[in-house]
Length: 134
Ligand SMILES: [Zn+2]
Image (cartoon, rainbow, N blue to C red; front, side, top):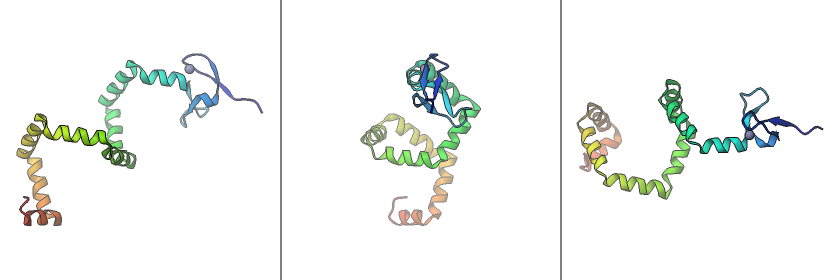
């Protein structure tokens, strides 16, 4: 059995396949760059720029929208919401000027009125109204 290796197209070194991430879309099933190069790249500013650019692109927006609805996101969000970091962020935000402003703006918006009207018709909404919350 021959040991399988692959030449990294970034650093040009020949490395064992275990040094490459898998990539189902690639011809041989592995990424063109070795793990080390990917790690370096992930840390770089260039990558941040690329991501920022990507998020602004149509393709990026679509994939973000898709991700926003995905199970994976729900799970990672649920996990995140249990963290101390999240609780702190929320607590900080709740006290911030920005929140007050955005809330004031939102409560005047059509969207809010619609949401509220819809909510008042739900069981939960009826109950809340009964308790004087609305
Ligand atoms: Zn490399």
